[in-house]
Length: 129
View (cartoon, rainbow, N blue to C red):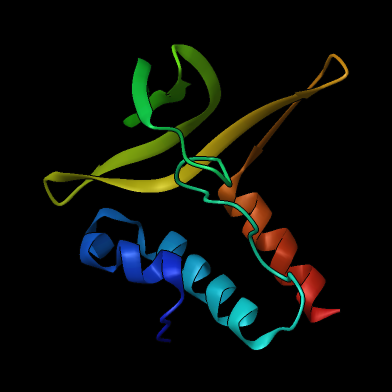
């Protein structure tokens, strides 16, 4: 499955940095979006968790659990921290690879946790209806 969508084109040189399952799901999402006339896939940058990238990103903290590394990456714009994303990495063949990206949002005091694999699965299900 090939894609020339903007995200895949940008990420292709780092293909080996992504788990095969995650990579295939990202490509499938871009292929579906390229065939559609309305939004049927991701409508934001899932790596940075944004539609409008900030000028600077910092790793705020890192946790390790069960062989998984989870850095918390925050956007910084004009000295103010904004959206964050928590990549999930595992060690594979001597290198760290991305297996998922976790997001936390707050709306009217309600905190919601989601992740990229979950979103991609839900979008795929919606497209199959």
